[in-house]
Length: 266
Image (cartoon, rainbow, N blue to C red; front, side):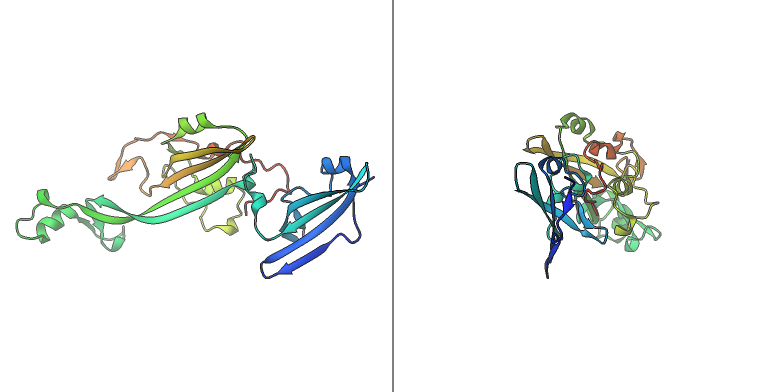
């Protein structure tokens, strides 16, 4: 028998927290096991008109030895079905931290404006410090500067220990943040990063936490830290201290998007 949707299949429950809806199909056990269309995958959307409703639960009900009924639940409440799916870009999660930290400096731009006047601390201390002040006895000057970090959590079916250990402490050889968003298929309408934003060599792969969460599924928490001056520049001098690499390649094989029904990261 072909997969058919029951005439009374569709029901909806609407609350202030969100919407749940159902679709019910009748088919053979073989069709159910092989997820023959229109039986949905977990993460499939309800319809073209309601793409925010995603399939979060599927229940099978036996009718006889050959036929069964498939109950598919769709919901806008919670996105648990996005998480911990090995090798799927849909499962990626980002945590972005933007904070201030103290950093020792030798000088500063007035009003924090790089187009303004640059003040040298040694000169300012010698000229305006207490009696006996000179460049040699100046105290340490600190300034609060932004510190931005990203933790990207992805899931893979393999243990990528060598990939991590050989790329730790390396910096990105091409634009990372914009390319990562494009790579993850996040529409430009959902972020405010301009296409010409160039963060090449400004992200460093700081570390990675790896753990198995079930059979054939490893969780990876990749940690990246941003330096607006560039990691290979210190005090305005190019050092070439850190090696570069293709940072986006860290997520290779954990970025599959082989069905249009799979929920997007957006």
